[in-house]
Length: 359
Image (cartoon, rainbow, N blue to C red; front, top):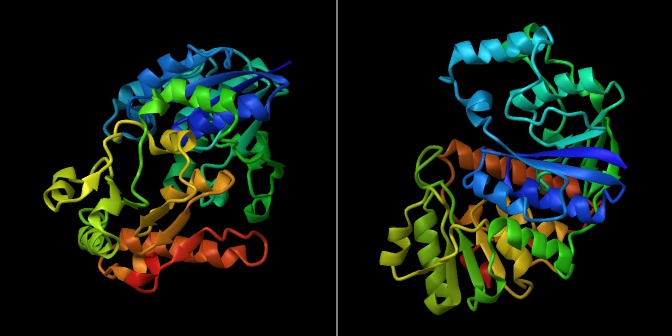
């Protein structure tokens, strides 16, 4: 059997790793890395160790190393210098053993360091990229430019692309890179082994989930980040007036102010500590309506399961002109929708031209 390692930095990636282990990599002993890039990652790694699904589960503290500009430069230089001279055993936050296949989505410094170490242990290993939602496919093309490329070159880390062989994705028609594609089957919410694995990792108590409201509004950061407020809060109140407050639930973004929705008399989701992706796999939302200004996160699970909920993007109902983050996201969504053409029919996605389109 092949020894496979899957490096995960987000909740979706952990769910996808579980899907791989059960439905796609049956010829492998699958080990898992869960990094501290996401909140509560250490707890989720501990939970994953309870499963017989994974050969090993590692918790990796590499976020500061990957992204924090004030990370101790002396420590970072020493890690890179040791790696360059082949003196150490790779990044201390990643497993020190050989693998035949390494899966990852994020092209980070720690991942590149680990791949470089693998070259020493097993010259025949390969790297596989995998998707993180339907909007992510062409973010998986390894490309470094400018100062970042020079820095990686200096450290001997700019050769990751030569190890990459496959791109694992649900809709291969959307991938524009050069890797050979491998189709990921749709996730099956009726697969007890898979759903139980996800529930165990993220602590979902399925019997306590209750979503009687037909409409679920997903707030984002666009009222307080990215530029001028877009008017998302005001839109949520208008939607409540349209469909009735008793029929609307607000899924509040972790960085949003939950009090403003409560004070407006809106009902907010109480399962805020549990990743939404895990909840969606444990509850039938096929007859619900998801509403968002322009957050692509509502597509992550919906695009990889049968019978997804109707999903309405409402960016034409707010003022995005003064918010660059919103403008960039809208551009990505518009380009994505136009690229679909006749390739894929994702009929559950709609864009509201007026408020009444929501119903």
